[in-house]
Image (cartoon, rainbow, N blue to C red; front, top):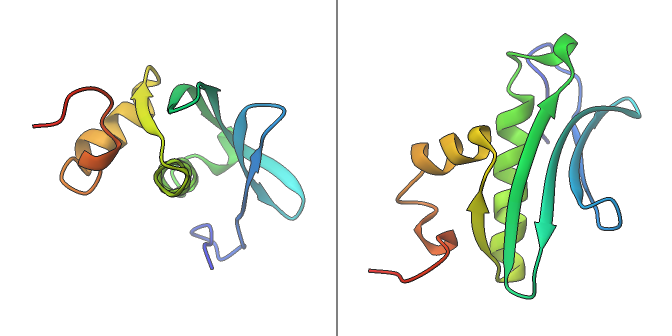
Length: 104
């Protein structure tokens, strides 16, 4: 179970129609990672976290979960969102399989 720093449970979901991953606490959406989708690629365009929850690991938790979901679905990833790009850079070895384009 994933929690905020103050111990509240974070629910993570994928909104297929809205093209976003969501993080919620007590039924309230507190974070979203928006994406575009092709047949083999997820393009992350923007990540936002409610200011009341910034600094509690919500964005990191949400993006790591979204990247794992892309991996499970067999998608490559392009990060036009700076936050997603930073997560990919921090976990470059772990996320090498998500890299879109030629692999070395």
